[in-house]
Length: 408
Image 1 (cartoon, rainbow, N blue to C red):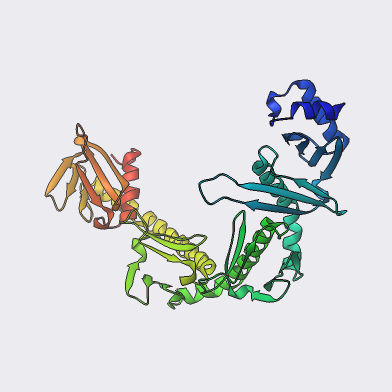
Image 2: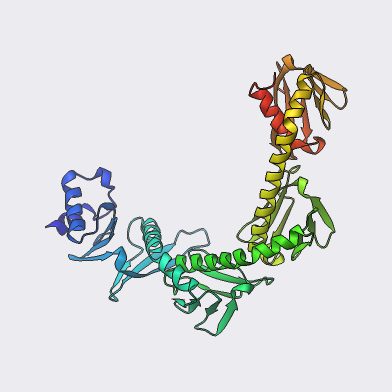
């Protein structure tokens, strides 16, 4: 009777729990309770297949047969996704859960909102199985993912016919369809294949990423020590030193004061400058080998620079405020601030404070600028690139104190 009610209600579309009659919600919850699956969270279905997603597992009703699987019984999650790359919309999504007794639970493409269901299944299975997989791999034991095996030292593919030590791993890319593993310094993937033959693909990616980060954490202190001692650290075309960043063995250089960020992304490394809105340089990952180590070193450098900057501000700001209050103009390159107002280019232009609408830093196409507005004018009175501002961090802190009313 319960099965008949559910099949009738779900015959052609997915029904949100919030829109279900209380009696129907009760029937769903009773099924979840029968199999000790906790609270009912979502419902999915097609003409003859109903899926009840619960807090502790999944119930499947197929042509009158009821099957259940608890999350702690799941041994593997598989997905077979094919995406159309043309103008049509023939994407297909098929998912499978394997219980620890070998029974398979299949969720075919015909289920309404199948992609969302698959994402929820993968997220829950990954959350439950990842800790054990990480512990096993970290302890030096093999963790199998079909024809791919991972341990703390290496990755093997094609059933052991190919091996890659973690010291040579650059990065892994995985989308819904395909998996790519890259060796340091190589443009082409060391290994690539479809995701469909890989059980628990999200766990595979997490385990590899975790083990790679462990490798970085182990070696990073030595790299930081070498950097601090003045040794340039080379990452292919990119080199970091105490003086700043170099591209192609010094053909292009930027001091650290001009670097806004160095972003290590999935497929490239991008450098942003303070005086440019867009990235100054973008290098493919294969041209910047060991980018994971680069990311760790950059994080350390930026943190140390921030700490040094804050120390400098803390030591300079009180005296700067005292000088300003005593009537001494404070010079910040092209801008000078006094109790009378704002002076530009050594007095060539002057705006008294009672006419200043705003004084702030703002990002334009050419990068970050100091913008000064005049009361009664829609157009900014002055826009000055921060390259023309000396001691920009102290300037920001000083202006912030002025705007908070601490300096009058």
